[in-house]
Image (cartoon, rainbow, N blue to C red; front, side, top):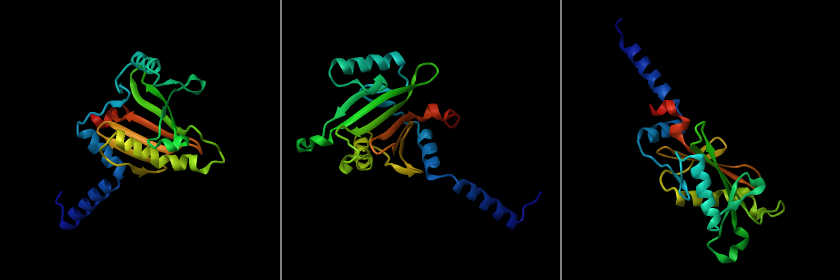
Length: 190
């Protein structure tokens, strides 16, 4: 079958339209995963690929050193981030975290929640919408690289195989999910 110039142009427009339909987020994920960069470090010596027993051992060590303790209902590990300005004691941030494991008990993600420890429903200055930019700033310092981008109701940052997704969960909590995209999108990696 011989293609005339109109058909060739129509096919090119169709190809460009299909590729343009990919969101900036999808393009970024594909680009970062294909870069081969590995960012397995999460925080406090916790990494993607460690076992459930590694997680418990590291958290027990944090507890013995007084860095962390059990959180509410013993469902999270709890620690506090102190404000750099000591006059801002009310701005102390509670950080709760717990690993997500696959079927082989390997860490594939970290579920993290942040809130001001002095939070109260009537205190506008300590609500999650005020905390969100502070956490975004903190995460950029902890994980330099690509900036956060808006994806639906979340802010998302992708560097190599590590994705950080952040959103306001409630008036009190900012929720963060740090996940290994190689595990999440196994088919894109191959």
